[in-house]
Structure formats: C-alpha cells, structure tokens
Length: 363
Ligand SMILES: NC(=O)c1ccc[n+]([C@@H]2O[C@H](COP(=O)([O-])OP(=O)(O)OC[C@H]3O[C@@H](n4cnc5c(N)ncnc54)[C@H](O)[C@@H]3O)[C@@H](O)[C@H]2O)c1
Image (tube, rainbow, N blue to C red):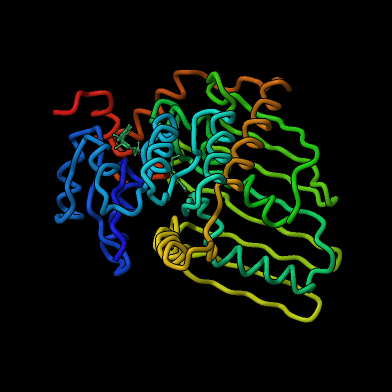
C-alpha cells in the first residue's frame, strides 16, 4: 500500500478521499484543510485518517510516499515545492498555480526531479474521448480537419469560490483547451476569441475561441457558465464534434451517461456508457501503478496541464482585448446567486460550509 496525505478537502478533496479509501493500493493517512467546518465530513469519509490544518505533518512524515494537492491554485506552488524537496510523489489538481510564469517554473522543477507528478486533466481519463481518438487514428474519418467542443452549463458563478483559478474560461475552459490539443495531436498556432460579459460582470463568463493548430487542424471551443441559470428546469449543452475529410465522430453527455456516435467509412458505431464524473477512480489507480512501475502508465502530465492553462489565459486575454460586450445587470447576477444558495441540486454548486468557513482561523 502507498501512504498518501491530501491537502484540500473541499468538493474535489472529498471525491478523492472516497476513492483513496476504496482503492486497495492506497492508505489515506492525512487530510489537511484550513477550514475546520469540514472536519466532520473527513471523519465520515475516512475515519482512519488524521485530520489537520498543518500541512507540514504530511511533508515531515517519512512514511508518506505521496501527497494530493487539492486546495486552491494560490497555495499549490509552495506545497508542490515542499513535496519535491521531501521526495513525495504528487497528484495535483489544476491549475498548478494562479499565474502561468509560476506554472512553467514548477514544470521545470518537476522535470529535474525523478518523482511521479500527475495533474488531474480528467478528460484524458474518459473512455468516450479515448474511444473517439482511437477511431480517428484508425483512419475511419479520413484526415482530421475540424475539432468543435462546447461546454455550457448553468454552473459556477462569480463569487462562489475558486478565485485563484481565474474566470470560468480558465478555471473550467482549460480542460477543453487541453482536449482540443489532445485530439489535434499538435500545438496551437493561431487563435481569436470573443466573449460576453454576462450580467455586466468584470470578466467575460462566456467565451468562444477558434483558430488553428500547427498541423493545419482547425478548432472552435465554446465555454460558459451562463446557460440558463434561472430556467425553471435547468439544462446544459456539452459536446465534442469531430469532422474529418470522410467521416465524423461526436459525443454528448448528460453528466450521467455519455453517448459516442462515430460515422466512419466502414463502421458506424453508437456507444453509451456512464459519464463517470471526474474519473477520480481511474486517476488514482493509474497514479499508483505509475509510482510502482517507475514510469508513466497513462496519467496526464504537468506539461499538458501548463500548456492548457497558458493557452486558456491567452484566449481569455484575447476575448477581453476584442471587447466583450456587457449584457444584463448585476441585479440579474444577484438573483442567480440568491437562487443558487437555496438549491440542493444544481450545476457546480459550491460546498457552502467551505465558502462560509473560508478565511476563518483554524481552531
Ligand atoms: N479537475 C477537475 O475537473 C476539477 C474540478 C473542480 C475543481 N478542480 C480544482 O480543484 C481545486 C479544488 O477545487 P474544489 O472545487 O474542491 O474547491 P473547494 O473550494 O470546494 O475546496 C477547496 C478546499 O481547500 C481548502 N484550502 C484552501 N486553502 C488551503 C490551504 N492552504 N491548505 C489547506 N486547505 C486549504 C479550503 O478550505 C477548501 O476546503 C481547484 O484548484 C480547482 O481548480 C478541478
């Protein structure tokens, strides 16, 4: 068993804790969070783990082989440097830092170490993307030409946490920037972005970016948490739409199941299976097996995550430069925030005890 301590026990930290407890390769020894309101959930999920607000307990324990960095992007760099210094393997959430320069410095430091450092770019663990990529590589759609990706939900609002992660096109959109680059198998070349400052908020909360990869493949990425927050019955629009010279492949999901439809020159395949949320079970399994094997058995890398973060910021900046118009008013935004505070189920709702407890002194 590999002994791990995790830092950050919010929405993501809890998903990880549940999986670490279930997976026989892992022993979850520590849970660290500066918000004491979350202590009870830690005891419920992982009664054998030590709950602490002192991250150094994990780093100073020589029996801890790995750390999970699941707090926010502003505290991650110092924690990652501590892990490298104390020889711990790292599973980190994205983005690695709250600015790209620090992310590239971290990437360089990781390269100099011989530790296993993975970043949860969760789409890379998704069966539906892997299925489509295999189909493209088999030649069934001819030559890959166009990648279209959308991720629009009535999700995370300004003021609901994740400040250091940046606006939603960076916080969430970097995943789809990464997916586009992964499908293209090439690096970004040109891009142009248009945004909307919904509710007249400071930052665009919906952005569409389009452009080219170095291999000539073109893309469009649409991301926004603006999709019908006040609708009586909320819905979303999330898809991947891949167009080749001869065929197409596409995917939609409803956050419970995902459906892949592939129309190739010799095969027509429709497949539906579980969406499997953030695929954390797969992530921690491949992370453990990679540590034991001493090589990457398929986990998403620091470099992929930093490139995605860097490009998402560039596209966001381009949308700002291109003059994202204001639509709606701060009152509209307040109305949505009020509704979300009373919702029990919804898209990307924060953990209110974390939001309300944030900034309190640990006691
Ligand atoms: N890969 C994905 O699909 C995905 C999805 C959601 C969030 N995330 C990332 O995961 C991270 C956590 O997101 P979340 O939704 O769980 O946030 P959250 O706000 O629910 O939880 C963050 C937790 O970290 C704690 N914390 C903050 N600073 C700390 C510190 N210095 N030491 C210890 N604890 C600290 C907070 O008290 C809180 O409990 C974010 O960086 C976010 O970008 C990734």
